[in-house]
Image (tube, rainbow, N blue to C red):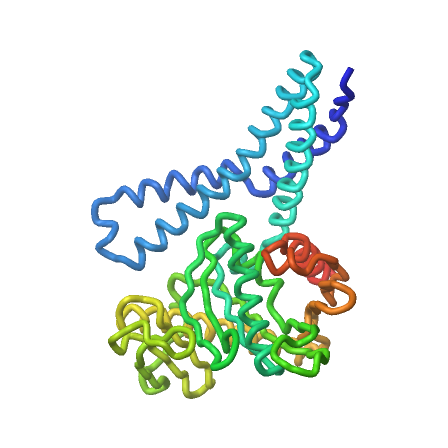
Length: 369
């Protein structure tokens, strides 16, 4: 007879699922979906494209979240049926399938449980990720491209839509910087724990002395705001430059000056966009990101002032957050949480869930201290 006594594990999963469903308030989400569906069906919806985008984005995000949560309940029901059938037929193949599905469900529910910790003001929004190479020459620009690929692969594995907004290629290897969107529910709250300085240590493929090279890259994550109406940007405060988009090695990929670079003169913030089809679209996308960064800068300055008045000068986040070792010991280690992996190749291929979950838990505990 097969040993398929998974009842204790399934009871624990159902209990955790019930807690998650209660926190997420599925009936409330259902009501919001119904309201947004009614708005989306209005014949004049697209008379105001910005408002229409807000409605359709909000609807798709809520639908995706509800579908993901409710699919877990259905999978739990199906699993119990599969276990019953396997026991009745004494079917070893079905038993293996049930055990694998149980393990998979434990991971899915663990991920959902972590998501309930995302309660920040902008956590439910899509994310805009910018990666910049730091010190380290060709190794740093190559590392920046490795990080970009890592996050895009992670998003792909979760079926999160992505859109590359801008890429500045290095003369040698890799990229100087890149900006891309991850358009999924709670993308910002999830991926924002990756913000900070990342360090790579390896034997450089670009040198001839076979010496260990340390290089750095910075990751910035901001929420994608449909309308950053709280920040007005006077035309006199910005400088707009237009130029032709280019690909690796300086090869032209556009025959018109459609790429846009906006410099906010008072703050020095620079935003570049080149992946839309027209100069007007690139300018609109760049302004949206600029307004978001200015809004967040304003919030950070207000928070810093409050800390100063309260006499607190201790930062909750360090600048360098993670080290990647590709020589001798093969190791990726997060310096905040202590989470690590001895499979850096898998990490660079998008296996980030463990690091992200540990980061979210760490941040949640830090907020409650």
